[in-house]
Amino acid sequence: MEKVDHIGIAVRDLNAVLPYYTETLGLPLMKIEEVESQNVRVAFIDAGNVKLELLEPMAEESAIFKFLEKKGEGIHHIAFGVVGIEERMEELREKGVQLLNDKPKPGAGGAMVAFLHPKSSNGVLYELCEKE
Ligand code: CMX
Image 1 (cartoon, rainbow, N blue to C red):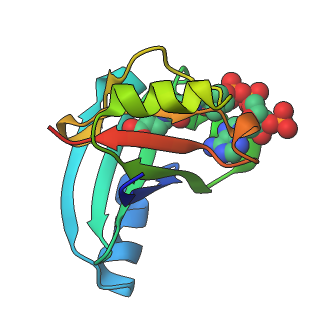
Image 2: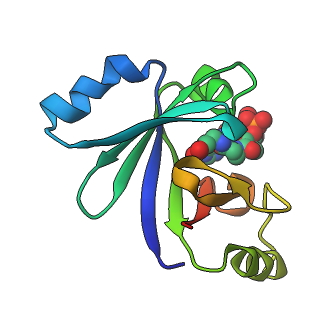
């Protein structure tokens, strides 16, 4: 893994929580975008050495919708920035880690992403992401 790229945080209403980050905490908003492949609307916040990715579900089929129903708002995943995502996935598979994707999928910011099952990562949902 290269480094932590971002921390994903599930929120019910992106517009409602944004002022907490931008005004109360005084952190810059980088961008807002819709990620169709994951059924989420996301905002990236610049927290200096790491980004915060606020995730709002766009449909009930979204993994974030289910997470909010079960656990409520809060930290959803930690994303590692990687180089050579397909090779990293294969290495992890060989080490017995269960991946949630056969192949990388398009994620936010044009990155290719894949997820590791929390059951094989000691209760943490990890994402691998590779920027273009
Ligand atoms: N972190 C840690 N554990 C989690 C979790 C999370 N974010 N989400 C679910 N779990 C746990 C559950 O608590 C449950 O554990 P128990 O069996 O002990 O109760 C277990 O995983 C299975 O949970 P589930 O609710 O039965 O299963 P789901 O159908 O919700 O699937 C998961 C969970 C992780 C497989 C699914 O959410 C997934 O495939 N995630 C990957 C994609 C994703 O999260 N996309 C949204 C982000 C998109 C983006 O960043 O752009």
